[in-house]
Length: 393
Image 1: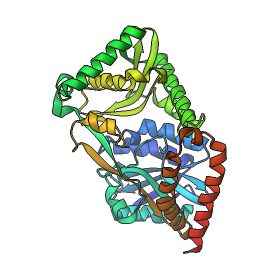
Image 2: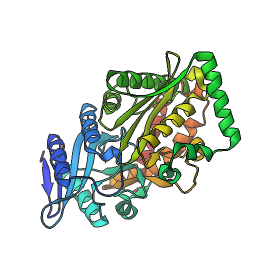
Image 3: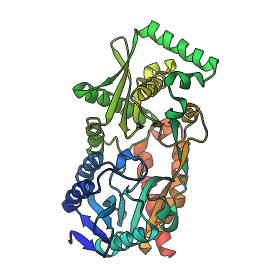
Image 4: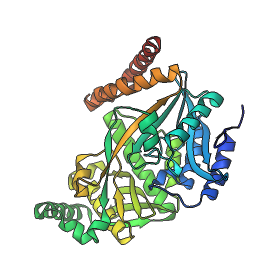
């Protein structure tokens, strides 16, 4: 297989060459321009690339250059096979929660040149980009070449700079809300010991993340759900490794000697990204998850963050926390079909996948928990829909 293909302003690298070029091109590019996305930063991308290889995907890297030959944009991808389709998606997916380009935004023409090279030199049928923000460097290109996948939502964030301090932020809530929170904290301390919040380092941070993952596994199992990250394999290990990154922040809430809530987040370039939060389910009546989040917001103020990214989806509790309906960025998934097979699968994803997801989520948890009885029929149904879509081309 060729390791790269070249046009006058586009290069595509594959396999180990993609990872090596990613490091080199990132250093050449220097500080990232455009909007902030912690999932497009080099340290996390390298962790994701290793997980992609371990899970059977092939790293791909698309570069665009200016007339002087300098790197302008980096599009990190990984290629895998799904139902016979060669699929290219963001290199950090599913670990990363946004899809973006590193460096300057991609123009529709530059994106089209990349897509052409991926099809002709690597046989890619379909490109998928999950959770593309309206302020992403991919937004303009995908508005021209992408097919929205009926997954529109928003990425809510707290504008910390607008409040100036945590006390001002707290004062924006009603007296009744603040009184209820105090009562819950007091009751928690009375029943389980003094409450302590801390941001951890070293081995303690990894132990806390492991506990958060264990809580996530227990909750997913109880709900009959699965997560591509918490797979007890390469992607879960990648999430653990992310907790040791220099800009990672692992915060912990304790009651007495007991760890009761954990969050893994990232603080980079003035933005705190709230990535993975979990808590002891037995203590849910005390609102420990909300207390953990409240304490983390206070810490973010002290750490000098300007924005607290709550990430999609726009759950009601997040909308209550942002305090301003204007601080939520539109987000959508996009598919870019590059072949007849890719067009068929894009249509299946666009219409069948949201319906199937809604069907499963509307089931009672005890019904969903019988996963082995649901998974195979669902997979067969999706495959049949894909074949039907292809025959209709």
